[in-house]
Image (cartoon, rainbow, N blue to C red; front, side, top):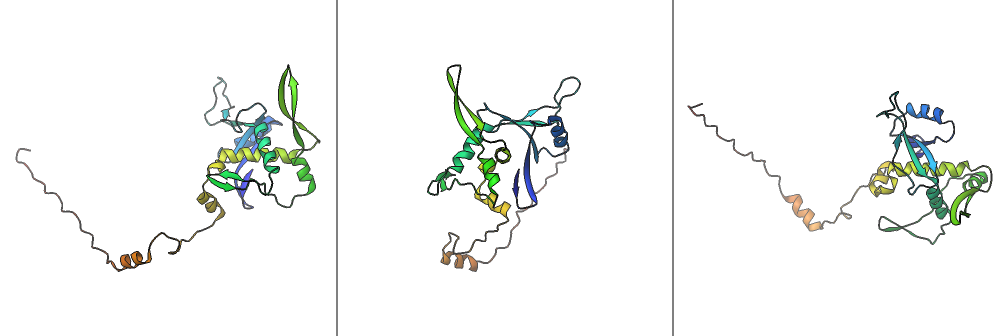
Length: 215
């Protein structure tokens, strides 16, 4: 789920891996712009793939306005999350050409939340002579990690990685007032333009209409 403030939800992702038909029934009642039906896949080459339609009619044709199922690359997103969790204070990340801080910010969650968030590890296994990397649970409960993966997928679908600084300010409700000192205008130029009176608007002459006796 991606939200701003306590009452503004931008988009929500619901896992269809359990009680699939019940989830589909719920998603059908919601706007496709705010609620996503998702399914995690391990071998995806992208964190979020293009959605596919799953609702069909009796002829086997997919419904135009049916449910869209988004497949997410859980392995890639988990790797991203764990790399951010390992970031140190002095680490830097280039974001839109500027140096940023790749840190995860959390409210005052309890210890159980962070145990669930770090409840998996990436291991390498040999399968048919080839190394294969996969995520394995180190404890039973890992709901916090799953929820963060789903929230990241929803954020990608929302286009949050491409948001400009003005977009963030707009969502936060920040109004930036530019002063004369901040504007790239010289004081003398401002004084001169302030003394120029407004000119009266001159309308162009109307074209003459010549009527021919032949018409």
